[in-house]
Each structure stands twice: as C-alpha cells, then as structure tokens.
Image (cartoon, rainbow, N blue to C red; front, side):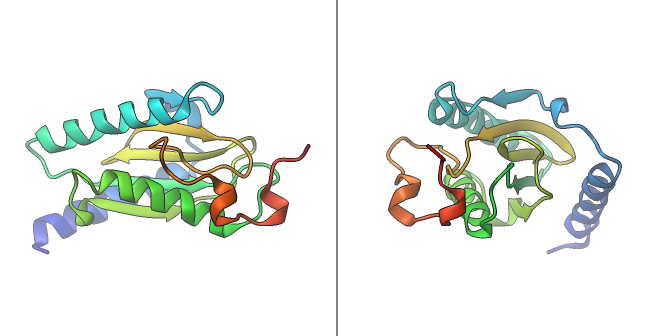
Length: 155
C-alpha cells in the first residue's frame, strides 16, 4: 500500500470516527431502504449504483460498511452475517482492499447496515429483527444458518 492510499485511508477513518463520536444522525443518508418494502431489490439496485459510481470515480474511494444491531437483537453473529452479505455482494465489482467492514453501536430501532463512500453516507439499509441484509433473493433465509434464539421474530 503506497503512502498516498495510507494517508487517505487514515483521513477517511478519522472522519468516520469523528462523525460517530459526535452523534451524526442516521437520516443524513441519501438513500434509505426500508425493510418492509422489497429490501432485496432496493439494496441490490442502490449497491449496484454505488459500485458503478466508485468504479467510475477518478479517485480510489474506499467503501465503509457498518452494521448495527437493532432493538432486541443480541447476536454478534447476526451482525457478522449482515457484513458478510454486504462484502460478498460488493466484492463482485470492487477490490477487497476498497471494502472496510465494521460493527457499530446498537441502533435504537431496527437493525441497519450503513454504506459510506469515503466519508459520505450514501445508503442505509434498515433490517427487520433477526433478519439478514438481503441483496439477492436467492440468498439463504436466516433460519437456514440460524441466528440466536433471542434474535428470532417474536410471534
């Protein structure tokens, strides 16, 4: 990694940390995918657009993905599954060095996965309790890989 990329990464990371510490609100995203309105298609469309913009940019932008558990969710495995799906989908058109994954603080409402390009929040995908980040309708159902018993939807 050359010094320019290292310097750029450090600057973007510092900006992200400052935003998180100062309580930047979640509503600053340009696009929000609601968990109840066709999240697979919405996530796929916005992530395709994000990847296209990153690849067409003259700068080598980093994509930060931050997953947050929602109210009533306790399993870190669920967060890891959400990040895994995001990385797998983004990895189709971005280099793995461009994708930075992180677990964030708990969200006061639904779980969410936030997508930043550089320091700009571009997409927030809201995720129902105990559900995974849906980016492809052919992905396995959360029941197939098992989330914690406390993370399942209550009847």
